[in-house]
Image (tube, rainbow, N blue to C red; front, side, top):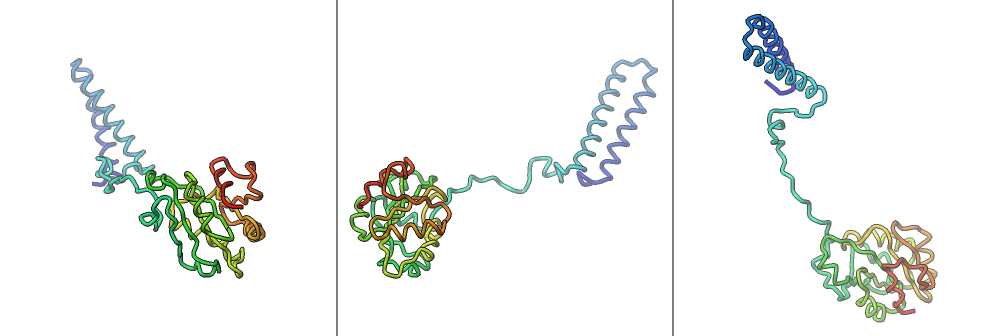
Length: 230
């Protein structure tokens, strides 16, 4: 007999009616304990019948197992989202980044990823990103190693690098590292400025173009990015 089935509901209604009828029939005998027991039993059965009717309508407990708390599932604390390269990103060490399709960006070489110390000590956190399009990687990497709480991507554009191709970079990085989906900063000194402006105009999700390295153009958490080479 199922918890939401009609037979159980009919049985509950019938039991309620029987208890009520018995209580009324025995009432004239003036047996106080019998009267009290009859009233309490009738009320309990009536409450149960109403509960079964509501449960049948709303489906709160579809089975006896669910009523007992056994839903057939076990709750587990889900692991934090991880990047595919998490185990290969030592803090402060530039790591060549070669995601699928990176050759289409036509950079002078693979970009370098630099993560802060907090990247390993806070495995459940995501981090904002500074994407630095620079003419030479070494000076930018040296500065990126000192930036706190920011994942830095250092890329040297090649002659064929276009904004349209670079637009895929944010999505690729989010697969490989624990980075935020918004609040990125795009910084590009010198000849890379035009490429940065064009990339910002394509509106990749999460980008905020920073021009001129002015403090009021960088969110406070990314202010150290002003130390990147001009």
